[in-house]
Image (tube, rainbow, N blue to C red):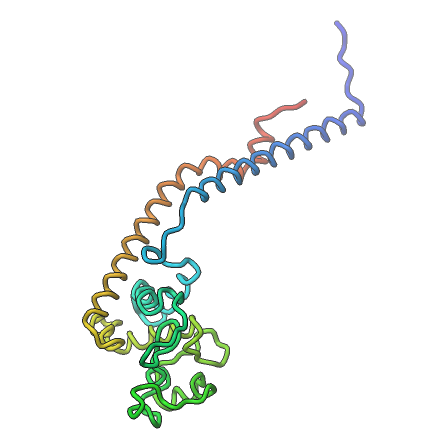
Length: 242
């Protein structure tokens, strides 16, 4: 019987190096496969037109504002959709003088007790600085909010505008469940109220359906996640290169 020679230290190092290299290559292959599959999964999801979907980049703004003022965030999304089609309408100045992505009348934003507001139908005679000055807004009792902490409450800034809208709606009944009343205060039109509530409900249904679909689909990739997350354990335990 021929006695098997014990590998030298140099040979053992080479074996370990080959094993490590193989594990590394295999791990990269698994990660690459995961990336390709996930990219294909995302590629089949066609973007929906703005009339049926909420732009993803705005969702966190609506949600934070709604949480701050105790509202349904889909209501804020609906106002943004109806007023300026998610800021896609140019210029964002209405024929009566409403401005910005959420279409505030300057006097509603700064405060109707400011000089010249009733006489100008809500447009006022504010300087650019006064329009965005939190101190001036506080003085005249407006709804403008400095949401991003830059020292200005700007009706042209989406974050400030959405928080200001939430402030207005909450103060006019929405935080107590009187959404239709608050919406009518925002724009004195029964058709406008119906439009806002329609989009609120449609957005909510589409959002909840989308979440349910993603949860269902995510189950198909659990195995892939586990393999990628724990590949070192599985490979080291299941593959013997010696």
